Each structure stands twice: as structure tokens, then as C-alpha cells.
Amino acid sequence: MNKHLSTTGLAAIFALSILPSAQAETFQTEKVAVSAERVVEGLSHPWGLDFLPNGELIVTEREGLIRIVGANGLSDPVEGVPEVSARGQGGLLDIAVAPDFATSNTIFFTFSEPGDRGAGTAVARAKLVRDGDAARLDDVEVIFTMNRKTGTRQHFGSRIVFLPDGTLTFSIGDRGEGNRAQDMNDHAGAVLRINQDGSIPADNPWAGGGGAKELWSKGHRNPQGMTYDPVTKGLLTVEHGARGGDEVNQPEAGKNYGWPVISYGVNYSGTRIGEGTEAAGYEQPLFYWDPSIAPSGLAVYQGDMFPEWNGDLLAGALKFELLSRLDRDESGKILSEERILDGEFGRIRDVNVAPDGSIWLLTDENNGAIVRLTRAD
Image (cartoon, rainbow, N blue to C red; front, side, top):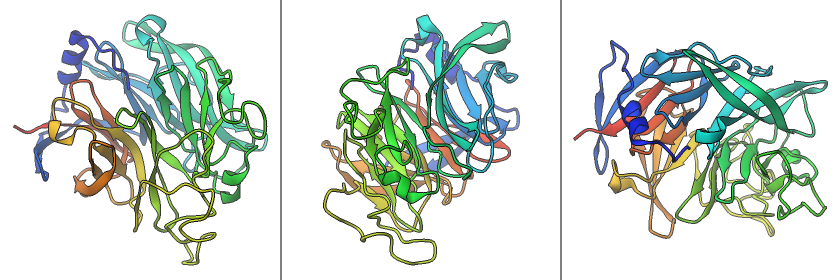
């Protein structure tokens, strides 16, 4: 998320034109009344969203389109997007505005990249160039390519998060082949860390050997939500379990989060996964859901609009079609869960907090929407 919006930019975000037929709906939560309104509809399975410094939004559609949302509504597709393999869960995935976008015009995005043996998650960077109402990508460069492409159609991940040191982290699922998450020479089932030019940080846990140099942590099934947590000063992920066992994890350098050796879920057939819920050498989740909610999209709430929620986690749910608020104490320990918007807007794919404190959701539907949450009072 871009933290460098000007006052004008904040005003532009708040003034985005609402659909003519849209009306705000009010929902009472445990601590505050929330107003929800669809800002945009008509997107095809939107996947990732970020804020531009001028107050506009940039959003991806899984089939391979990038669009900009501003005061005049939804733009035509941005030109110059590379070919994506839009099959199954693959396609154009997350998007992130560079911390120095105001001077560099650089964006980053993840996508399922086609190759000789199938597809794999890739990371690209590009310059966003504006020409009136039109926009295009220039100097597109793929800075990371998954080292083993396959024909499976699921578990690509993938979210992008910048760390305070300027490095770029991103997630990749196990590609539907669980054992890959335990192969330290395989990019699958991992959180990875690179520099913004694609080079390898010297302090990565396997930079000196013993595994793929880009790896940060392993043993992840399919992390489709990831964020930096200012409370614990580290990364947080939400990831899909199998039948049960969706997890919140805190990926740390060189650690293994267990999939498919340990899990709080079971196989879809009902049989046990691996060694059970714990084993030596594998990290425990901070929280897990059983039954699965299918979490995708994660944010730590920090803002003035909902001070009651400061420090809490907000996770979208695809299967259960809701927003999960995980209440935390000052140390970051998860205390309880509140479920919001249950079934009201469909499958929630992404969660973002704007600098004014409003919360922005993407719905993963054929007629996908951008939904803005504000304080009802």
C-alpha cells in the first residue's frame, strides 16, 4: 500500500464517483457501525489493488487486465501487460505501487507466466505512463521467474509486500503439489524476498547456499494474503488449508511452516495430513480456521476512521464470503474473531486500508466490484 498520498490525493479517493444506482448500506459490528458502498462494478475477477499518489486506484483483473479508477470512473485497459496464463487460479494477480512511485512511476505485479512446461508465478516491474485518459506500461521487465513451471492450475499465491528496508517480498503456493513446499531448491510453497531490481539480498537465509537464494520461508500451502505488520515489525500471511486448517502465519527468515508435514486440517478425502498438528522443526500458526473460510487478502488496520480496530487483522474470505476481523492485544496476540459482511458482497479477494482509514475490498466475481467501507456515523 502506498503511504505517500498528498492531501489532494486523499480528497480524490474520498470523492470517487459512486455507481449511479449504488446506495450505501449500514452494518452494525461489535464496536462500530460501518457504511459499505460499491464504488465500481463490472470487473472480471479483480485480484489486486493499490493506491496511486494522486488519489486514483490501480487494479488487476485475473484474465490479464490492469485498470485505473479515478474521478471519471473505470479506465480502458492499460496497454503493455505481458502475456499471462489465465487458467484455473492463474492469471494476473497482485499489484503494488513502488514506495518511490511519485518520482519513479514504477509499479510491480505478479502473474502466472506461461512457459514450455506449463506456468509459474513471476514478478514484473514497469513504468506506468499516462497520456491523457490512456495509460500504458513501459520498460516492462520480469525480475523473477519461478524455477519450475508445471501444468497444474492452482496455488500460484501471490501477494507483494515491501519491507521497511526496501526489499520486495512475495508469496507462491505449492502449485497443488504439497511436497514442493518442503524442497528448499524449489520456489513453490514459499515466501520469497528480492531487491527491487530482481537481485538477491545478501542476508537472505539461503543466499550462501543450501537452497534457492530467493527463499525467505518455506512450508506454505497457498498464501493469498500477506502484509507487513507494524505491531510485530514483521510479515504476516493468511493461507489456504485443505479441508480445514486455514492459517495466519508470521513468516520469519529461514523458518519452515510445516505444509504438508503438519496441518490443522485434513485431506479432502478426510484422511490425516502428514504427522498431525505439530512436529519438531516446524512453526505453529498464530491462528487457524476450521472449517476453512478460504482466506485471501490481508491487512493490519491502522487509521483514524476506525480507532476501535487499530492493530487488528482484516482478512477476506472467498468460501464464506465475509470479512474476518481478528482482534489483537498490544503485543499482536490474536484474542478473538468477529465476522463482518457475512454473505453481503460475495467472495472477498483483497483487503486494503487507505491512508484516510477507509477500507477497500475486491470481490472475486464475474461482475467483480470494488467496495469501500467507511464509518457510518
